[in-house]
Image (cartoon, rainbow, N blue to C red; front, side, top):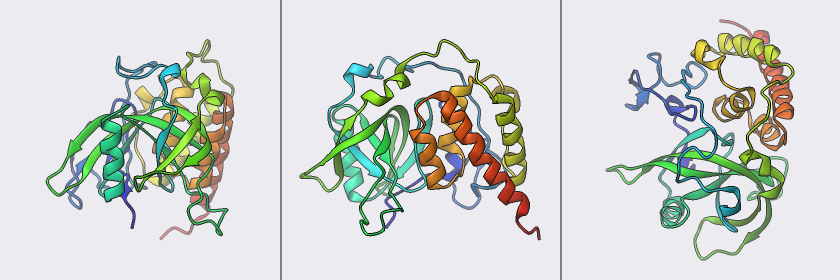
Length: 268
């Protein structure tokens, strides 16, 4: 059973979504007026921020030595991006309760589909985030927003007395997630914007282009990695790309493939 889903009406950038209506299929706040099919709509607005986003965000040296992790396919969170989650399985309700009682953090990791003989296998690289919004529902769920902080490599998985998984994270390879960039001069930004235009058109997605064009390239790529409906391998490649330029180039390659497939698909 899937223990959580990313509500397609609530994919958002760091500042969150601004609901314009209510989805007539799922009664959740919608961020466009066109329903909640993820390939049909993704309207999002942004407000530029730099880490730490609030006084509650930890510094790099304050990141925890152990971290609960949530394996979920096709879902990553990146530094500076928001990931809305809907939690209802008991072990992950426990995970959230434990996190809220300590550092408010857990990590997102994806199952590794290349290791079919190990059904519990996950990719070695994930991203830790902090719970920045939290709401309990009358039907026993928790709706929250996880804001990405820093990526990590899994050093080892620990035995746990709880049902959820616990790892020792190595944050050091991604220390730069906490560093302000000295320059926003990246190669191929224009190509990225061109491909985004084609991708949004092909997938009937929407965005506020005026605001999108003001976002620094590194923050834009991190946010798009989180919110775009890319497959798990594409998202993982973006997650593991260490430098902002590497991520831009990786996202360009992924969008070129997606646009080619969208234009090659039969139209009815």
